[in-house]
Image (cartoon, rainbow, N blue to C red):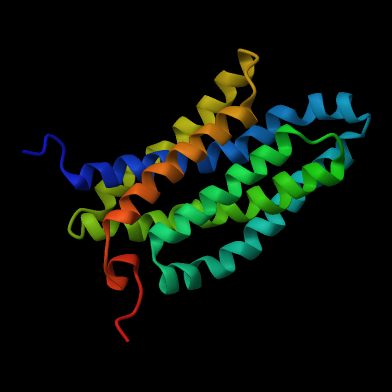
Length: 193
């Protein structure tokens, strides 16, 4: 017999996705001063990275609904997680503003939009059609945990990009395993033709 209902695993997956979402966005504010020092750049120039992130986030948000409709929330969340993971990898190895712009601005910006609230709302509402607000409240707590986690890790001198990358990879593994268990196009959000 099952100890934990699959519906609760849905909330857990959404919680982790939203924690990664917030950790990826919140981590930048913790890195402004170290980036200024390491790159010898002004705060204004370093802040352009966050601006790029938000512009890409905004543009990717415009197409997020289309992606959810066409591919389903799970595929959209997994793809967003892959983008965030790749962005964190690029950020962890970056030594220039251009590389950081690619990692944080483009990859993380797009990934954060795809992994965010719209896809998670659809994902959770499939399992909790009569309790969507309560379920999203529980899953949405991941955003607060993600922001607090980024701050705590930075205070303890841990590499936020490395931790975020590991969380994204863990989430992608979980979602990929769930996706493999589904066998019909409908279960992936696809049309029946």
